[in-house]
Length: 546
Image 1 (cartoon, rainbow, N blue to C red):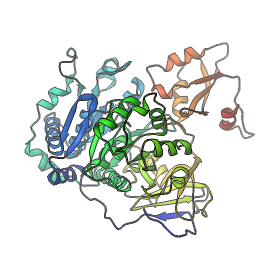
Image 2: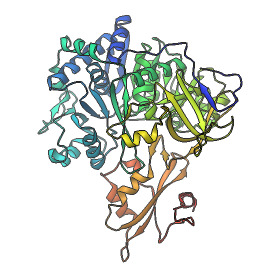
Image 3: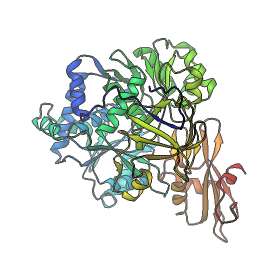
Image 4: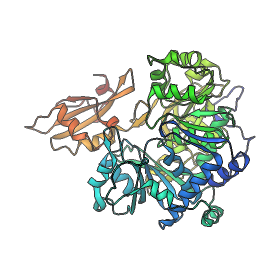
């Protein structure tokens, strides 16, 4: 951590004493394997699988070989639509090794969002779960069909041993993997041609204009971010990190998987989706030293009726991120879960993701009231959103960040890339923040019209655009309302067309299966007009407090 004695303006630059990694992910991973081939790399409790670093390398090489056999070439896009499991991490390593761009698809996506995402980036291959709880992923793909997904050439479903019937037009993931050759000479040949600055991952962020944007990240972006995040946590090969946060987000994929891989630590998945009991069981059984989560996850673990049954004394560190943590919860996490060195991280997908983080020795009051200080090799400044002038310490403005972590750009969207990243390469986050004289950053609000529900970023405009498709909706405004459990919940204010009437159930029924469950408004209010300013702009803040 870079600690400056006393800043005269809200600008800070991270330390540069530890150099940046300039290798592609696959090459770095192979080097780590050579250092500790027999150390445990991955434990997936719900699948009953364990891999050493050498075994994980062999399986990843088999998958890379099998993907090449499909005729894929460096730069082609390959999608993964799944919760946490072994195939997910195999896809992450295998695609990086042969320069394929991994496209993370949120498991909460439904037909409309899936169709947009796959077509936007031209996915040629999709690996998907078959189903999860009430979600039928193969059914959604069949509903879309080849006509609506013209670029998708191959679909593989993640099967369990002896599971289920064959799926017409789709193949089993186990068959794909079995066809690969761990000693395939093409892999090493391709790895030599890859550069750290090559794009390797696309993650969709909700769009203010109604459609998600594909934030495109490079090897250099996410490998270095994973490394410096791990440095903040003081990770080493003896650490075992429990990762209940989703891999389709940067939180699981970078702060989890890559933080471990860059430090030779062990990745531990307690379950496919979040379940507080399996997290507690896993920490005890696997003697985990680290645990990640958003505040709602830690609250669910602490408040579980069986919490006191478990020995969590091996825990030391981890990351709490996604939304601000109440001070009382943080105190309980430190005292009752033994997470004395837990850290807080702040960032966004477009910055790989972390820009600021507290360290293991940041005083507790600062860990709760701030998001720490700027990460190494990065710059952070707080500016006046109108003039761009850097603010004095303690005064709020827009947080901007610059350095290796800033994304390659939005996929096939130069105009919106230029809106986000200025001519001097600063990423404008849209978040309102302050920086104190010691460089600690505090997020105080948002410039962008954004709702954060339980760690999920939701742009109301996207929900509004979708609800406009309903035949009875004349106008709609979506706002966030305070919520004790999730931080914020969505509320839709709807004006129906003249002579029409609609019900809450009708609107929710229209959303079901079309947009992710967390984007479906919890509250629906039917009104005849919206509160307006004198210039005719809708006052969303008044809608949110009515």
